[in-house]
Structure formats: C-alpha cells, structure tokens
Length: 117
Ligand code: FAD
Image (cartoon, rainbow, N blue to C red; front, side, top):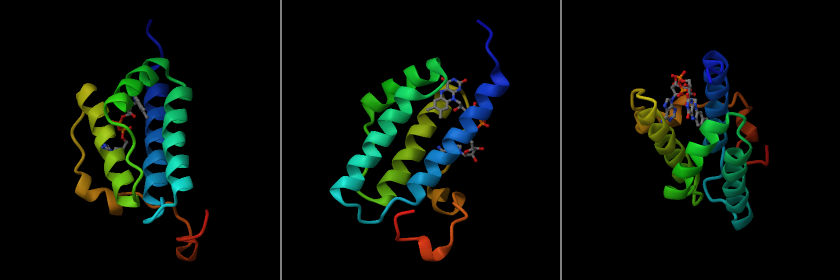
C-alpha cells in the first residue's frame, strides 16, 4: 500500500513535539503517581498511535527501552534516545541530546512551572 507520506510525516512531527514538550515539563522530583502517569502516557501513546506501522515498531522500541520516569532529565533524555532509535531506522540524522533542554518550550508562563499544568 502507498499511504500518504506527507500526512504521516506531519503527524510524526506533531506527535514528537507534544511528547518532547511533555517530557520537558515533567517534574524534577516526580511523585510515584506522576511516574506511573508518565509510564502509562507513553504506553497508551504507543497503543493508540494512529499510524499502525509506526505504532508496531515503536512497541518493539518500548519493550527494549522502557520509559525512564525517575526525573525530568531522565524522561527527556529517554525521549530523545528513543526518537533517535526511530530516526536511525528511517535513516534520518541523529539528534544531539545535549541540546534537548533548550529545544522544547511549551510557551507556558514561568510561574506555572511547578504547578500541575
Ligand atoms: P521528526 O523526526 O518528526 O522530528 C521533528 C523535529 O524534532 C526535528 O526537526 C528535530 O528538530 C527534532 N528532533 C529530531 N530528533 C530528535 C530527538 N532524537 N530528540 C528530540 N528532538 C528531535 N514514520 C515512518 O515513515 N515510519 C515509521 O515507522 C514511523 N514511526 C514513528 C513512530 C513514532 C512513535 C512517531 C512519533 C513517529 C513515527 N514516524 C514514522 C514519523 C517520523 O518519526 C517523523 O516524525 C516523520 O518522518 C517526519 O520527520 P522529520 O524529518 O520532519 O523529523
């Protein structure tokens, strides 16, 4: 089947953006509930991801590399790492994970920072 590569790429960019921005806003010191919420978020994201072929591959990635939820930094670095696994499979360049912190800005007010969004 041919599919629609442009729509699939658009969806991918939007999905990655939401995911990395979510990780960028995850608490520095999450509670057990917050950790469990992020874990479930990632697994449900995979399970319900609209591109079936993508979801299937990402499921294999999650089995090998389960989400890291111990801190904001761990989550963001994990997100960058798994995106790079997908990049590699699609023969896209590797992203430098040291750059991740400055790259994702939610546009939220600074005073929201430690509140529940
Ligand atoms: P994208 O990969 O969408 O990245 C968007 C932007 O994020 C980049 O321009 C860069 O600024 C930044 N970025 C790049 N790498 C990283 C990183 N490691 N960490 C943080 N930021 C980064 N497409 C398929 O054709 N087949 C698939 O099987 C497939 N599986 C996918 C699985 C998932 C879970 C997702 C979310 C998407 C998948 N896609 C798949 C879509 C694919 O990953 C891309 O989103 C799409 O091809 C558009 O690519 P892009 O080059 O515009 O950059």
